[in-house]
Structures are given as C-alpha cells and as structure tokens.
Length: 287
Image (tube, rainbow, N blue to C red; front, top):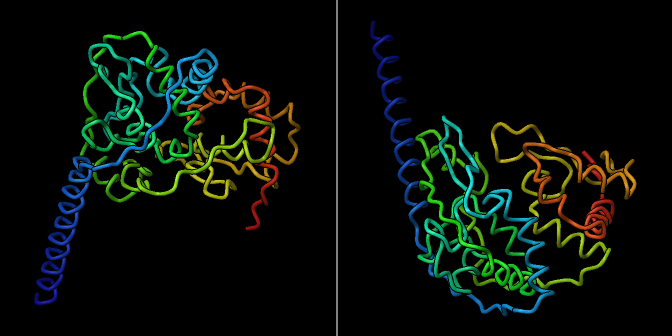
C-alpha cells in the first residue's frame, strides 16, 4: 500500500512539473510573438528607372508571390487544423494591406522581419532576405511601390495551443526571424550577377535552401512537420549525375508541395546555372 502511495505521489509530482513546463513554454512563446524590436533601419536607395523596376519585379516574382499570392493581396499560406493558420498577408496598398508603407518600413519588414511597429513577422524568411544586396532590395521596393492596390483583408495568424508549444520548443523552425538576425551586424556584400559560384552562393542564401537541405546542403528536414526529408544537393547526391541542362529542366518542372519551385522556375537559365555551379563546388556528404 505504501509503495502504491509513493507511485501515486510520484506521478502527481510529474504531472505538476509537466503542466508547469507547458505553461511556461506557452506564455514565453506568446510573449515572443508580442515582442517589440527597436531596429535602426539602414537607408536603401530606391531607383525609379526601368531596369531596376524590371529587376525588382523579377525578384518579387521569385521570392514573394508563393506566400503572398499572385496579386500580392494575400493567400492562405499555411493552414493546419492542429497547428493553426498563418496567412500570407496582403502587401499591397489596398484595404487590408499596408497603405502608406515607407521605404524604411519595407526595409524593416524584408531585411529585419518586423512590421512598422517593430513586432516580429511570423515565418517571414528575413534571415534569408538579409543577404539581399542593397541594390536588389532597393529594386524590389521600387517595384512594390508600383503594384496595384488589392482590397483584401485576411485574419491575423491564429496559432493553436499545440502550434504554440511546438513553436516554443523549436520544432517548427525559425518562426521569428527577428529574434535571430543581427540587426546591427555588418551587411553582407552583394556580388556581380554572373554565371559564377559567388553569385550562385548569393542566390542559394537568398532563397533559403539551407532551411530544408541543412546548413551544409547535404540533406535535412523542412520546418513543415508534414514535409518529407529534403535530399542532399551537393556532390555525392543526384546532383553528381545532372548536367547543367538537367538541373535547369528539373528545377523548372519539379512541382513539389514542399519545394519553392514556382519561385525557382522564374529564375533565368544563367541564374540557375550559377546555383548549380555553386552546389557542385561544395564537398559531398562524408557521413
């Protein structure tokens, strides 16, 4: 009888501890969602002539429409009954969007992952976009200022208890990029656009390939719990057998729910060739 009592007390203590830990994680994660960052936003030159506008549209097509919709007026980006919903917000100047966004507001959102109030933008991949050169970022902002307004209001993110817990435990990836970006750190330098390993690395960084394929690109896992393992894309993987033409064709025809193929398919042949050049320059998986 005494042994059963000890077991019951032990189980009770364990339950209390687990509940306390869960409560701490939940409220800590909620606090992180509502954190405010005082970011000193650097100046970026926003041109108005046709060439930068064309470049800006190209980058927006590649990087933004997948989440924010074809008209950039929002989309149902993520919706899972067990985890919650996170819409790709309306980033036009229409009702429900971001009217009156200044250049500073755009830089803060794209490069630093925070809205104009300094609150973190959920799942905004600013950790990747931080690598955008000033020239490319300025071109993107220049184009966004020409986008027709879309009147579309979407609800704010609605995260379930389970989704909040998994976020707090880091099981859904880097949900709040504003937490991990060195907002006062040195700016990564831009590189000339060319079929080169340097420009290929720049594109790999901006597209966030390491988020799913791992830091060394030898294979990893997407933050999406439903996603399958992401294969290696360096020497020793399927890349070893792909020619330049094979890589370009695969990138433009591979329609995967978990691969940002719509954006990659927008890239030019030279841009895709530069990515391949960088990938095959890396050592393979030595595990």
